[in-house]
Image 1 (spheres, rainbow, N blue to C red):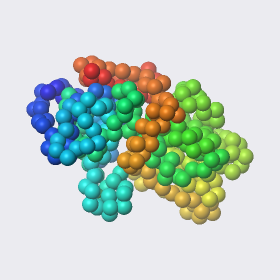
Image 2: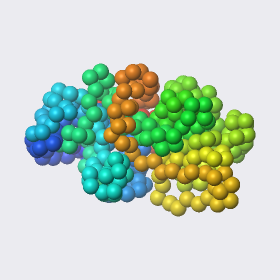
Image 3: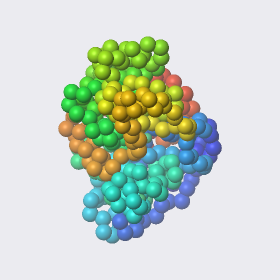
Image 4: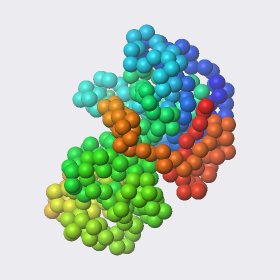
Length: 339
Ligand SMILES: [Zn+2]
Ligand SMILES: [Zn+2]
C-alpha cells in the first residue's frame, strides 16, 4: 500500500509498504481519509522537533473509516467514520491507573514515536476510535487538535467571567481560545503576527488582541484593568515566550504551558511567589475530551472549517509539503485528502 515516509529532515518519499493485515482482538482496520498537518509534522520535516526519530511516517490528526473489526470490538462497526485518539498508552502505569493516559509514562504517539497515518490503511486499537454519525471528514481530522485546546482549558479550571490570555494564535492556540470562550471566559489573544490576530477576530470573534514585543505587557495590563490574566496559556513552544508568559499572570493566577520546547525555562521566584502562581503543563488530551470536542462540533458550538487554509491530495503532498513547512500563503491548517 502507498505510504509517505519522512526519511530524514526535508526528505519525504512515497514508498510501497506491506498491507497491515486483518485486525486482531480489540483492533480495527481503518482506511485513512484525511490527515491534518500539525506543527509537530512541520517541525519534524524541518528537523527541529523534540523527541523525534527518523525515518517516520507522519500523521496523527486523522479522520478514518472503519473497514473491519477484530473480535471483542463493540464501539465501532465497518462503515463508521471516526476521529483517532493517536496516543497509545500502556494502561498500567501510575498515570494510566489515575485515568490520565494522555501522560502515560511510556506513551507512544502515532506519527511521532511510531508510524502514523500518511498511508492508505492502519490497524489500531478500536478504543482509540471516536465515531460521529454527523460530522464530515475534515471536521473529524481537526478533532485531535481541538482536544489539545480542550485539555489545556480543563487544566486551568477556567471560570465564567475570568480573563484568559492565549499566547500563540496558531491552530492549538485557536483551539484553546475556542474552548475558553465556551467556559464563558473573556479571551485575549497575543501573537507576533498581526495577520494571525486578524484571523482570531474573523474565525472566533476575539476582539482583544495584543501584538507581542515591546509594550505587550502594558497592553495586557490595560485590557485587564490592571489585574493581568487569571489564566495564561502559552501555545508557542518558544522558550522566550514561555519565560515572558509568567509576567502576564495575575495575582493568584495560573500559567498553562501547552506548547513545549527542548530548553530550560527560567522565571523570577519573587514574581512567582508574590503572585502565588500555579504552573501547569498540558500534554495531549484524555479520551473524554475527544467525546466533548466531537459533541461541541456536532452541536455547532465550535466551527473550525475556516481554519483550513491549505489542501493537498495524497499524490501532491510530497511536492506541497516544503511550502507548508515554510508556512507560505498564511498557512493556519493544511489538510491532506486521501479520498
Ligand atoms: Zn498535532
Ligand atoms: Zn501508562
